[in-house]
Length: 447
Image 1 (cartoon, rainbow, N blue to C red):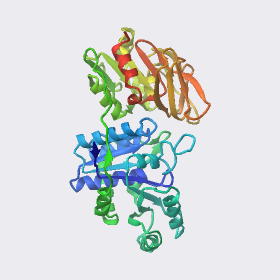
Image 2: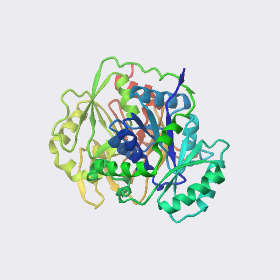
Image 3: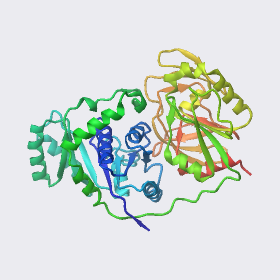
Image 4: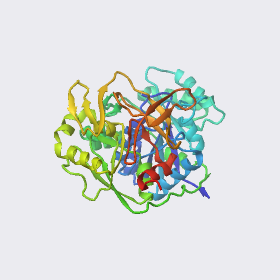
């Protein structure tokens, strides 16, 4: 069938151009106008979608052309928007517009995703310190590919006087619409740390700040023009989501979700529910017991290193989880969740804290990202393959050796993951839709 969703992508020439804050402010501005907005993020990032979700009040989803082929990408995108009765879907790009991975360097780039979703693109350009040279930069991005999908521009960090001059020159010479500008606002500056921006709940009065920023950008950016551009997006063919078998019996999964554990793909949660899993959330920091009805445990990534003392001090929760695993209950743990299962966690200041101890390993901080990027993971016993991503500044002295991780398009691989009948744990963040049967067979048990 064919599907139509009014949609736009906000892309940029490079990271640090202001994509996330401008995307959030415009999402908020559209919402204040009464539009049902859908929020999406290119790539495997977890933090930017948390900001999107905070400002629009519905989950933001990742769109990723490494994790998903074109048919799955379109089906997931279409279903997410249809389920929310979306008036306009706004997709935030990743890094620079043409930056990706793979042999040609553009696999999983914003450009590839815009191409697969047939999506008009607005280029956000940080024009501070630039004059007419900004036109040359924009022209290069427009012409680098035959159909760049770039249909508009927003200029960031410039004055009203600069804007009037640059808008006239860009529109006259490049025949592309400039939809507005963003002056230097104090509200645009949000703190960050080793994995990116701090989390939304850590920023005081974030909702108020986003409302102020949305109101200001409503005065300098043509929101109606952006809405009209979104409606020019083409129809695209949409298949159905892949069939997913129902589990032999319903399962209740306890999902850790708090300040320390918050890196969750909405697609993964949806897939689990399609299999017949009921999700129940809990906090390893604040709760003293696991949900009583839990059959399965999911410990996602996040920032356990920032809350190591609180996790250590919650002795009853650690004992509950230790007993849960010892009782043979199935557990999935990724990155930060994996660190929580180890014997000991060392925080950023070098303090050492006892953790659950279900995995014989100790962790330590490193000075750079470890094994950063996309990977394909192969279960070395069964040959099953699933796609994932690593993004962490910590490491351990026992990362497991049951799976083989391979960098796509490169001759780089390493052993990782602790895998048993009851446990899948390691640094990689897994994307379940890339091999739903692997997750199904783990939860259902192999025949």
